[in-house]
Length: 327
Ligand code: NDP
Image (cartoon, rainbow, N blue to C red):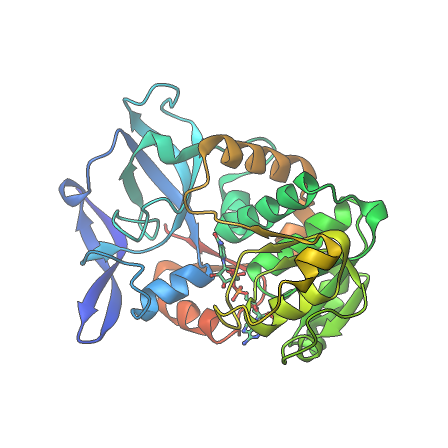
Protein backbone atom coordinates (compact mmCIF):
# COMPACT_ATOMS: atom_id res chain seq x y z
CA UNK A 1 0.00 0.00 0.00
CA UNK A 2 1.34 3.42 -0.92
CA UNK A 3 0.06 6.94 -0.29
CA UNK A 4 1.05 10.46 -1.32
CA UNK A 5 3.56 12.26 0.89
CA UNK A 6 5.79 15.31 0.69
CA UNK A 7 9.22 14.00 1.57
CA UNK A 8 12.16 16.24 2.52
CA UNK A 9 15.60 15.01 1.49
CA UNK A 10 19.06 16.44 2.14
CA UNK A 11 20.41 18.18 -0.93
CA UNK A 12 23.89 19.66 -0.56
CA UNK A 13 23.65 22.44 2.06
CA UNK A 14 19.88 22.61 1.83
CA UNK A 15 16.75 20.51 1.59
CA UNK A 16 14.71 19.45 -1.41
CA UNK A 17 11.09 18.35 -1.09
CA UNK A 18 8.78 16.57 -3.49
CA UNK A 19 5.57 14.55 -3.53
CA UNK A 20 6.25 10.80 -3.75
CA UNK A 21 4.33 7.52 -3.48
CA UNK A 22 5.30 6.46 0.05
CA UNK A 23 5.19 2.81 1.13
CA UNK A 24 3.09 2.34 4.29
CA UNK A 25 5.63 -0.23 5.50
CA UNK A 26 8.18 2.59 5.73
CA UNK A 27 6.17 4.51 8.32
CA UNK A 28 7.77 4.72 11.75
CA UNK A 29 6.41 2.81 14.75
CA UNK A 30 3.41 4.18 16.62
CA UNK A 31 0.29 2.85 18.33
CA UNK A 32 -2.13 4.88 16.22
CA UNK A 33 -2.58 5.13 12.45
CA UNK A 34 -4.39 8.21 11.17
CA UNK A 35 -6.02 8.73 7.78
CA UNK A 36 -4.80 12.30 7.39
CA UNK A 37 -7.25 14.79 5.91
CA UNK A 38 -5.50 18.15 6.32
CA UNK A 39 -2.19 19.68 7.29
CA UNK A 40 -1.04 23.31 7.25
CA UNK A 41 1.95 25.57 6.65
CA UNK A 42 3.38 27.25 9.74
CA UNK A 43 6.49 29.46 9.98
CA UNK A 44 8.29 26.44 11.46
CA UNK A 45 7.41 24.42 8.36
CA UNK A 46 9.05 27.20 6.34
CA UNK A 47 12.15 26.93 8.51
CA UNK A 48 12.14 23.12 8.23
CA UNK A 49 11.85 23.06 4.45
CA UNK A 50 14.30 25.98 4.20
CA UNK A 51 16.83 23.45 5.47
CA UNK A 52 19.08 25.73 7.53
CA UNK A 53 17.32 25.57 10.88
CA UNK A 54 18.15 22.01 11.93
CA UNK A 55 14.46 21.34 12.58
CA UNK A 56 14.45 18.15 10.49
CA UNK A 57 16.91 15.89 12.26
CA UNK A 58 16.78 12.83 10.02
CA UNK A 59 16.41 12.44 6.25
CA UNK A 60 14.49 11.49 4.23
CA UNK A 61 11.48 12.58 6.33
CA UNK A 62 7.85 13.42 5.62
CA UNK A 63 7.64 17.11 6.54
CA UNK A 64 4.74 18.94 8.22
CA UNK A 65 4.50 19.72 11.95
CA UNK A 66 0.70 19.48 12.07
CA UNK A 67 -1.99 17.05 10.95
CA UNK A 68 -5.67 16.32 11.44
CA UNK A 69 -7.69 13.32 10.38
CA UNK A 70 -9.56 10.21 11.47
CA UNK A 71 -8.12 7.29 13.42
CA UNK A 72 -7.83 4.21 11.22
CA UNK A 73 -6.22 1.82 13.72
CA UNK A 74 -5.32 2.14 17.39
CA UNK A 75 -3.92 0.13 20.27
CA UNK A 76 -3.65 3.28 22.40
CA UNK A 77 -6.01 3.33 25.39
CA UNK A 78 -8.54 6.14 24.97
CA UNK A 79 -8.03 6.56 21.22
CA UNK A 80 -10.63 4.69 19.17
CA UNK A 81 -11.04 3.95 15.47
CA UNK A 82 -13.12 6.76 13.99
CA UNK A 83 -11.95 9.45 16.45
CA UNK A 84 -11.24 12.81 14.81
CA UNK A 85 -7.82 13.88 16.03
CA UNK A 86 -5.24 16.64 15.75
CA UNK A 87 -1.48 16.48 16.32
CA UNK A 88 0.71 19.55 16.77
CA UNK A 89 4.49 19.37 16.77
CA UNK A 90 6.02 16.92 19.27
CA UNK A 91 8.49 15.07 17.01
CA UNK A 92 6.55 15.61 13.78
CA UNK A 93 8.85 16.82 10.98
CA UNK A 94 11.79 16.69 13.41
CA UNK A 95 12.50 13.05 14.20
CA UNK A 96 9.18 11.50 13.13
CA UNK A 97 7.31 11.51 9.81
CA UNK A 98 5.00 14.52 9.73
CA UNK A 99 1.65 15.70 8.43
CA UNK A 100 2.26 16.30 4.71
CA UNK A 101 0.93 12.85 3.84
CA UNK A 102 -2.28 10.92 3.43
CA UNK A 103 -1.37 8.64 6.31
CA UNK A 104 0.48 8.94 9.61
CA UNK A 105 1.52 6.43 12.26
CA UNK A 106 2.42 8.02 15.56
CA UNK A 107 2.12 7.84 19.33
CA UNK A 108 -1.42 8.22 20.61
CA UNK A 109 0.06 10.41 23.36
CA UNK A 110 0.62 13.09 20.71
CA UNK A 111 -3.04 13.25 19.75
CA UNK A 112 -5.84 15.49 20.96
CA UNK A 113 -9.43 14.62 20.09
CA UNK A 114 -10.88 17.52 18.10
CA UNK A 115 -13.61 19.11 20.21
CA UNK A 116 -16.99 19.96 18.65
CA UNK A 117 -17.90 22.07 16.78
CA UNK A 118 -14.46 22.10 15.11
CA UNK A 119 -13.99 20.03 11.93
CA UNK A 120 -10.71 18.43 10.85
CA UNK A 121 -10.35 21.33 8.41
CA UNK A 122 -10.96 23.91 11.16
CA UNK A 123 -8.32 22.14 13.25
CA UNK A 124 -5.72 22.76 10.56
CA UNK A 125 -6.96 26.28 9.85
CA UNK A 126 -6.05 26.77 13.52
CA UNK A 127 -2.93 24.55 13.44
CA UNK A 128 0.11 25.13 15.61
CA UNK A 129 -0.13 28.86 14.92
CA UNK A 130 -3.68 29.17 16.30
CA UNK A 131 -3.09 26.77 19.15
CA UNK A 132 -0.04 28.87 20.09
CA UNK A 133 -2.18 32.02 19.98
CA UNK A 134 -4.47 30.33 22.52
CA UNK A 135 -1.47 29.34 24.68
CA UNK A 136 -0.58 33.05 24.73
CA UNK A 137 -4.11 33.98 25.81
CA UNK A 138 -4.06 31.36 28.57
CA UNK A 139 -0.78 32.89 29.78
CA UNK A 140 -2.29 36.40 29.74
CA UNK A 141 -5.22 35.13 31.81
CA UNK A 142 -2.86 33.26 34.15
CA UNK A 143 -1.11 36.60 34.72
CA UNK A 144 -4.39 38.25 35.72
CA UNK A 145 -5.08 40.11 32.47
CA UNK A 146 -8.73 40.77 31.65
CA UNK A 147 -10.44 43.09 29.15
CA UNK A 148 -10.89 45.88 31.72
CA UNK A 149 -7.11 46.15 32.22
CA UNK A 150 -6.54 47.97 28.91
CA UNK A 151 -5.29 47.46 25.35
CA UNK A 152 -3.65 44.25 24.18
CA UNK A 153 -1.02 44.52 21.44
CA UNK A 154 -0.63 41.77 18.84
CA UNK A 155 2.58 41.94 16.77
CA UNK A 156 3.00 40.18 13.43
CA UNK A 157 -0.76 40.61 13.16
CA UNK A 158 -1.13 39.53 9.54
CA UNK A 159 0.66 36.25 10.25
CA UNK A 160 -0.87 32.98 11.44
CA UNK A 161 -0.37 33.41 15.19
CA UNK A 162 -1.20 37.11 14.90
CA UNK A 163 -4.42 36.72 12.90
CA UNK A 164 -5.87 34.10 15.23
CA UNK A 165 -4.77 36.07 18.31
CA UNK A 166 -6.52 39.21 17.02
CA UNK A 167 -9.73 37.24 16.34
CA UNK A 168 -9.72 35.43 19.69
CA UNK A 169 -8.84 38.44 21.84
CA UNK A 170 -11.44 40.68 20.27
CA UNK A 171 -14.14 38.03 20.70
CA UNK A 172 -13.11 37.72 24.35
CA UNK A 173 -13.84 41.43 24.78
CA UNK A 174 -10.35 42.90 24.65
CA UNK A 175 -9.52 46.12 22.80
CA UNK A 176 -6.90 44.81 20.37
CA UNK A 177 -4.19 46.88 18.72
CA UNK A 178 -2.63 45.11 15.71
CA UNK A 179 0.96 45.87 14.70
CA UNK A 180 1.84 45.08 11.10
CA UNK A 181 4.24 45.84 8.29
CA UNK A 182 1.30 45.51 5.88
CA UNK A 183 -0.86 48.55 6.62
CA UNK A 184 -2.62 47.98 3.29
CA UNK A 185 -4.20 44.94 5.01
CA UNK A 186 -5.74 47.05 7.78
CA UNK A 187 -9.29 46.23 6.66
CA UNK A 188 -8.56 42.50 7.05
CA UNK A 189 -7.27 43.10 10.58
CA UNK A 190 -10.27 45.26 11.49
CA UNK A 191 -12.62 42.54 10.19
CA UNK A 192 -10.87 40.09 12.51
CA UNK A 193 -11.52 42.48 15.39
CA UNK A 194 -8.60 44.92 15.66
CA UNK A 195 -9.76 48.27 17.09
CA UNK A 196 -6.57 49.97 15.91
CA UNK A 197 -3.79 49.11 13.46
CA UNK A 198 -0.24 50.46 13.90
CA UNK A 199 2.87 50.38 11.72
CA UNK A 200 5.35 47.80 13.00
CA UNK A 201 8.18 50.25 12.29
CA UNK A 202 7.07 52.17 15.42
CA UNK A 203 8.30 49.15 17.41
CA UNK A 204 11.09 47.57 15.39
CA UNK A 205 14.00 49.99 16.00
CA UNK A 206 16.09 50.32 19.20
CA UNK A 207 14.07 52.25 21.83
CA UNK A 208 14.14 53.39 25.47
CA UNK A 209 14.49 50.87 28.33
CA UNK A 210 11.11 52.07 29.65
CA UNK A 211 8.58 54.25 27.86
CA UNK A 212 5.00 55.45 28.32
CA UNK A 213 2.66 52.74 29.63
CA UNK A 214 0.64 51.73 26.58
CA UNK A 215 -0.26 48.03 26.87
CA UNK A 216 -1.96 45.89 29.50
CA UNK A 217 -0.56 42.87 27.70
CA UNK A 218 0.80 41.63 24.41
CA UNK A 219 1.07 38.63 22.13
CA UNK A 220 4.45 38.89 20.42
CA UNK A 221 5.46 36.59 17.58
CA UNK A 222 8.28 38.84 16.42
CA UNK A 223 11.01 39.07 19.12
CA UNK A 224 14.14 41.29 18.87
CA UNK A 225 13.77 45.11 19.24
CA UNK A 226 10.00 44.77 18.85
CA UNK A 227 9.74 42.62 21.97
CA UNK A 228 12.13 44.90 23.88
CA UNK A 229 10.00 47.95 22.97
CA UNK A 230 6.76 46.15 23.83
CA UNK A 231 8.15 45.31 27.27
CA UNK A 232 9.24 48.94 27.71
CA UNK A 233 5.72 50.18 26.86
CA UNK A 234 3.82 47.67 29.02
CA UNK A 235 1.97 49.01 32.04
CA UNK A 236 2.22 48.07 35.71
CA UNK A 237 1.74 44.31 36.31
CA UNK A 238 1.21 43.78 32.57
CA UNK A 239 1.95 40.48 30.83
CA UNK A 240 3.84 40.04 27.56
CA UNK A 241 3.80 36.61 25.92
CA UNK A 242 6.79 35.79 23.72
CA UNK A 243 6.24 33.04 21.21
CA UNK A 244 8.14 33.95 18.05
CA UNK A 245 11.20 35.28 16.33
CA UNK A 246 10.02 36.66 12.96
CA UNK A 247 12.18 39.79 13.42
CA UNK A 248 15.01 38.04 15.25
CA UNK A 249 15.91 35.79 18.16
CA UNK A 250 17.71 38.52 20.12
CA UNK A 251 16.13 40.41 23.01
CA UNK A 252 18.04 43.70 23.26
CA UNK A 253 16.19 45.25 26.24
CA UNK A 254 16.72 46.02 29.92
CA UNK A 255 15.44 44.66 33.23
CA UNK A 256 13.66 47.96 34.03
CA UNK A 257 10.15 46.84 32.90
CA UNK A 258 10.47 43.88 35.29
CA UNK A 259 11.86 45.69 38.34
CA UNK A 260 10.03 49.02 37.98
CA UNK A 261 6.68 47.89 36.58
CA UNK A 262 6.40 44.29 37.70
CA UNK A 263 5.93 43.27 34.06
CA UNK A 264 5.80 39.53 33.38
CA UNK A 265 7.48 38.08 30.30
CA UNK A 266 5.74 34.76 29.70
CA UNK A 267 7.51 32.26 27.46
CA UNK A 268 5.32 30.18 25.16
CA UNK A 269 6.39 26.79 23.80
CA UNK A 270 3.89 24.79 21.81
CA UNK A 271 6.13 21.86 20.88
CA UNK A 272 6.49 20.14 24.24
CA UNK A 273 3.45 21.61 25.98
CA UNK A 274 1.97 19.01 28.36
CA UNK A 275 -1.08 17.14 27.13
CA UNK A 276 -3.39 18.73 29.73
CA UNK A 277 -2.43 22.20 28.50
CA UNK A 278 -3.06 21.17 24.86
CA UNK A 279 -6.48 19.77 25.71
CA UNK A 280 -7.37 22.99 27.55
CA UNK A 281 -6.14 25.13 24.63
CA UNK A 282 -8.13 23.11 22.07
CA UNK A 283 -11.26 23.17 24.19
CA UNK A 284 -10.96 26.96 24.58
CA UNK A 285 -10.42 27.31 20.80
CA UNK A 286 -13.62 25.32 20.22
CA UNK A 287 -15.47 27.61 22.64
CA UNK A 288 -13.98 31.02 21.86
CA UNK A 289 -13.00 31.14 18.18
CA UNK A 290 -15.50 32.56 15.68
CA UNK A 291 -15.45 30.04 12.81
CA UNK A 292 -16.57 32.73 10.36
CA UNK A 293 -13.46 34.75 11.22
CA UNK A 294 -11.35 31.60 11.02
CA UNK A 295 -12.60 30.97 7.49
CA UNK A 296 -11.67 34.55 6.52
CA UNK A 297 -8.05 33.96 7.59
CA UNK A 298 -7.73 30.69 5.64
CA UNK A 299 -6.87 29.57 2.13
CA UNK A 300 -6.48 26.01 0.83
CA UNK A 301 -3.58 24.50 -1.13
CA UNK A 302 -2.49 21.00 -2.23
CA UNK A 303 0.56 18.98 -1.18
CA UNK A 304 2.57 19.99 -4.25
CA UNK A 305 2.10 23.71 -3.41
CA UNK A 306 3.68 23.41 0.03
CA UNK A 307 7.36 24.13 -0.85
CA UNK A 308 6.44 27.43 -2.53
CA UNK A 309 4.23 28.61 0.36
CA UNK A 310 6.88 27.46 2.87
CA UNK A 311 9.41 29.75 1.15
CA UNK A 312 6.89 32.65 1.08
CA UNK A 313 6.12 32.38 4.81
CA UNK A 314 9.79 33.00 5.66
CA UNK A 315 9.63 36.18 3.59
CA UNK A 316 6.59 37.40 5.59
CA UNK A 317 4.43 37.20 2.46
CA UNK A 318 1.76 34.80 3.70
CA UNK A 319 -1.35 36.23 5.29
CA UNK A 320 -3.34 34.36 7.90
CA UNK A 321 -3.46 30.59 7.70
CA UNK A 322 -2.85 28.11 4.89
CA UNK A 323 -4.57 24.70 5.03
CA UNK A 324 -3.12 21.80 3.04
CA UNK A 325 -5.64 19.32 1.61
CA UNK A 326 -3.43 16.21 1.46
CA UNK A 327 -5.97 14.26 -0.57
P1 NDP B 1 3.80 33.95 9.93
O1 NDP B 1 4.88 34.11 8.94
O2 NDP B 1 2.45 33.56 9.49
O3 NDP B 1 3.68 35.32 10.76
C1 NDP B 1 4.80 36.09 11.12
C2 NDP B 1 4.47 37.56 10.96
O4 NDP B 1 5.49 38.34 11.55
C3 NDP B 1 4.44 38.02 9.49
O5 NDP B 1 3.23 37.74 8.86
C4 NDP B 1 4.67 39.51 9.65
O6 NDP B 1 3.43 40.11 10.02
C5 NDP B 1 5.62 39.57 10.86
N1 NDP B 1 7.01 39.73 10.44
C6 NDP B 1 7.68 39.01 9.49
N2 NDP B 1 8.95 39.43 9.38
C7 NDP B 1 9.09 40.45 10.27
C8 NDP B 1 10.17 41.32 10.62
N3 NDP B 1 11.35 41.22 10.02
N4 NDP B 1 9.97 42.24 11.57
C9 NDP B 1 8.76 42.36 12.17
N5 NDP B 1 7.70 41.58 11.89
C10 NDP B 1 7.87 40.62 10.94
O7 NDP B 1 4.33 32.92 11.02
P2 NDP B 1 3.52 32.18 12.21
O8 NDP B 1 2.39 33.06 12.65
O9 NDP B 1 3.29 30.78 11.84
O10 NDP B 1 4.63 32.20 13.34
C11 NDP B 1 5.02 33.44 13.92
C12 NDP B 1 6.24 33.25 14.80
O11 NDP B 1 5.89 32.48 15.92
C13 NDP B 1 7.39 32.53 14.11
O12 NDP B 1 8.61 33.10 14.56
C14 NDP B 1 7.26 31.11 14.61
O13 NDP B 1 8.48 30.43 14.60
C15 NDP B 1 6.76 31.36 16.01
N6 NDP B 1 6.00 30.24 16.57
C16 NDP B 1 6.41 29.75 17.76
C17 NDP B 1 5.73 28.75 18.38
C18 NDP B 1 6.15 28.31 19.73
O14 NDP B 1 5.88 27.18 20.12
N7 NDP B 1 6.80 29.17 20.48
C19 NDP B 1 4.59 28.10 17.72
C20 NDP B 1 4.16 28.76 16.50
C21 NDP B 1 4.88 29.78 15.95
P3 NDP B 1 3.01 41.54 9.45
O15 NDP B 1 3.07 41.44 7.97
O16 NDP B 1 1.63 41.75 9.99
O17 NDP B 1 4.00 42.55 9.99
